[in-house]
Image (tube, rainbow over all chains, first blue to last red):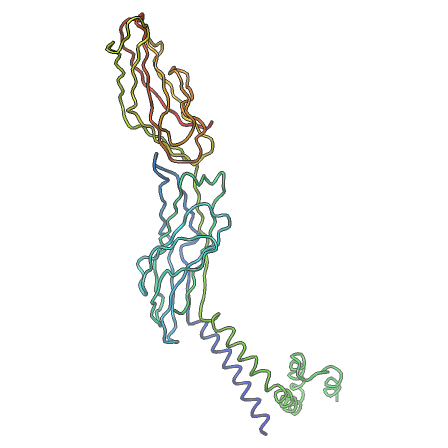
Length: 160
Length: 202
């Protein structure tokens, strides 16, 4: 084999390795939302006060971080909700790995905010409960007049 | 011979992906051709793969270091309208202490009652009515110090009368001013009312 052919073989091997690395990284970290798509309905209020909040804890996150790189990970949350009328917030509770951050108010278009931080590498199938709180004030109206708020809530597992 | 014809007619550029595909197919028939074409193909493509690899590495670094999942959360707010009264019993005693000689009408007022409301519906109103019929003495009602809406003074009867109109989506309160009115000519007596306030769509 001449020199050119050897170089070709090297390049071919390089490509295969590169693809393998990408695949390995993609498999290394995972995040899943469990519990489906919750619907929260506010039905009562206090005269002279405000509508009563509704809390939902049916959903949870499952997350796995790879052995490498040797860095900590975090989960951020953001939402898209066109024409948002009411309030929605979320907080992670009972996280088995990582640090739970304070409650996050979910507003349409706002930047993703930290939900769980300091997740160690090589965390396998860690989980946390998602506690959603829906709230509204009387002045915001009702869904019959202004429509429902449909949030597409996105959780992102990423390096800190 | 057949293989070489394909080379000349169907592989105009040896570094194309389709060319590589054909080269692979050709190789099935002729191992020699494979070696020659592979050598040619890769030797001419030394710089580009490295450049592409570096580009991909840089551009996808952030992408494959994070992974996202989404779900849908729906918030529904039902129409809610609530109201509450602060006190139970109100006594309006006309004792005659303030009576003016020569004047038939005597009156007394009370503002101890507060109404609280909350509504997320448009254009609400509060009405007032009594269960007492007939009445010996007249009782008037008026909303005062209200945080919203428009007061309407009304004589209380068994027919609902507007008490506070034009209440928008809000949480608020108002005092109720009752005025008991008696004429000296009506003599003495007691009227016992069960007053009902209702918040409803205007």
